[in-house]
Length: 440
Image (cartoon, rainbow, N blue to C red; front, side, top):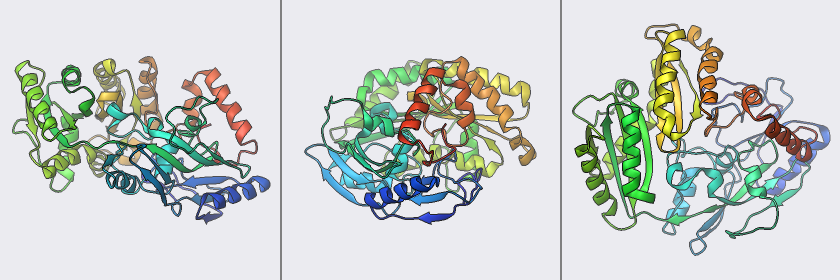
């Protein structure tokens, strides 16, 4: 058994596929009594090894894919309750079926599941406007290690009766309990959408452009993505059908999405704002999608970047965040430090500039040995994560900790925070059967 990057492989004693929350709880009760580790898995799209058993063959893999019922969709309360195995794409469709909008959006939305999205506090492209998965959860149903079912499900937006247990389990990566269902927030459905691709000279100009667009679009600014020319070149080289949206070549690009709640509103705001941005020297050029197909093609350029890097050879990846105002400084300094230790490596930083989350990936040298490059993964991490720490950032912005960053977490997390996390783990999972070896 392996995960999408094939970095982590494992063997399970067996695969268990319960059909409902009660069966999940019964499995946990039995495993807890016998001290058998349980690794929960949704769509197996995680990127840090959190859904993969170890190599011992003693753990069981608990698949949540059969828990796929949509229990309730309520447009009056702007809430829906879904089971953990519902894919993100189905969740989006369920919201649209009642003329509402569920904003969580990931490249893997056709296969990733709501349970996994919540367990890892998934981010995606619309965090700038709506927040991450934790911000979209009203309540959860959770199977605890001892076989009890805890439920905070419900449509209440205000409930001040004690600890926020919902947020405790969201982002816990299955180490405190297994999420079996969730009540999620719905929003008014945008009636118009404008997607634009802009050329900029450098990340500093992109940062100025972000502030300019945010002031004029307000909450209608749904996404602001930073793309380097090297990343676009890789997509054009390796992804069939990809086309350069601008006639001239620029060092960097911004992908901007603006939503409106009246017909044509987003298009009007985008046209006026981006035209003014070019006039004021905040962008070099712009192309605004004129159809849904063109908008999808622009987003494919951004979402294909990881796949293009994979086809180019070895790539050492970092899912980091730093304060938004320091992104240009971070990218420049990281480039200098990497060049000093990996002279021919190719940094490809891209991602969610609007919320500070940059995927600082580094591709192998042209014609280099892939295995030899990947063998230096830890050395590259020392450089990038060390700089992240200096900038007051996070080593995991949206992918979680899993197995990949477990040891690193202990070095960068506040010691008191780690003590509290370990105390919670000991209280809720004293025998350590829930996703052992992950996060802590």
